[in-house]
Image 1 (cartoon, chains in turn orange, green):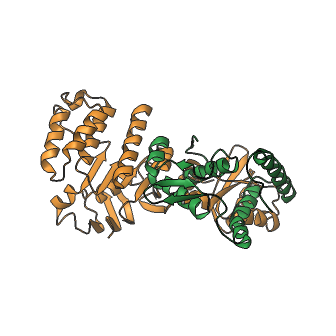
Image 2 (cartoon, each protein chain N blue to C red; image 1 turned 45 degrees about the horizontal axis):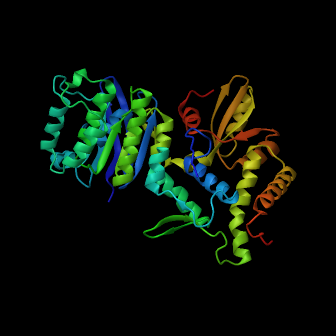
Image 3 (cartoon, chains in turn yellow, brown; image 1 turned 90 degrees about the vertical axis):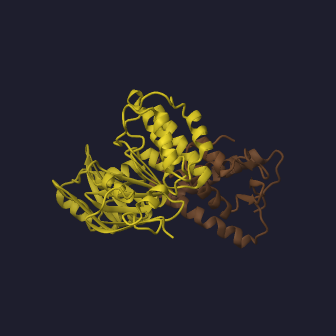
Length: 297
Length: 137
C-alpha cells in the first residue's frame, strides 16, 4: 500500500490562484523522494498538503490509506514533519518541547530520544529562542523522528544552516535511512544533498509536476549538445530533433538539452542538420535542473 | 580500498561506486574473496543513501564482479563463474556499448578507442604478469 497518495491536488491562495495546479504523486514504503523547484514553485504548499496540514482546494490526499481530515490524530501520530518556518514557543526550552512531544506520541522511543539528544549535543535547558538556527532545527528534527514515524516530511531541512550543520543533518538522515528504511519526502535547494539522499526526483515548476523520475535514470537519460551561439532559425531547427528539451545561450555558445542517446543524437545532428563536430556531454544534476526550469532563450 | 564519491559529477553516484570497484578488481587492488563494506557502512562513510550503495552492489553482482553470501556479507567474486565463453562474451556487450557511447560523448573515433584498448590491455598484462594466472583468450 502506498504510504502517501496525492491525486489532482489544486490549491489556491489569495494572491496566488494557482499555487498547485493538479499535482499527483504516489510514494511507496521505503522511497526517498527529493522535491526540487524554484522558489515559489509550490514545494512548501505541496509538502504541507502531503503532511495533512493544509487542505487542498481540489483533489484527494491519502496518508497510510487514511483521510488526514477524517482521521487526523492517527495520521499525525505516524508522521513526522520539519519545516524551516515552523513556529515554536520561543521561551520553551528544548527539553520541555521534547517532553511535550513525548506525551503526544504513543510510539515515542525514549532510548532513541536519549541517543539523539547526546549525539546532536542539544542543550536541553536553553530556551529555543536562544539556540542557533542549526541547534533549533536539530530539536525539531528530534521531535519529528523520535516516535519512529512511517513517513517523514522535511521542508528544506537544511535551509539556512551553515555547511557543518548541513553536513551533520545529512549524516543523521543517512543513519536514519540505514537503520529504519524510512520513507522520506524532502525538499531542498541543494542538488548535491538531493543527489546523496534521494532515490527519486520530482521537479515542481509553477504549481505543476514537471519531472518525476528515478534520480540516476533521469541523469543518464539526458545529454547536452554544445553549439556555437545561433540565430533564432537555427534554434528552431533544433526543436525539431527528437528528444529536444530546452536550449539556453551561455556566452558565445548554445547549450541544448536532449533526452536522447548521445550516439544517436550526434548522428542526427551531423547528418540531418549538417552540424558535425558538436560536443555532446552529460550534465550534473544541478545543471539539468537549471536547464529544465531556468529561463529559456 | 577507499571509496570516494563526488555528488554533482556527471556520473550518478551509484555508477561512481561501480566504476571504482571494477577498476580496483581489474588493477588487482581488490582480489577475489575480499570483503566489501556493507550497505550501511559504505552509506555512512560516504554520506549517501544506503539504497544507492545497494543499487551499485546489485548491478555489480548482476555483472558478476561481486557476490553476496547470506549472513556473511558481500565479497569480490572469482570473476570466472562457470559460464560458457559465449555467455561470458555476451556479458561484455553492454560494456562495449557503453564504451562506444562514452567515446561519442568525448568525440573519440573508433580507431582511437581500439588503440586505447590495446594500451590498457598491455598495461594490465604487465601488472598481472607477476603472480596471477594469465587470462586465456
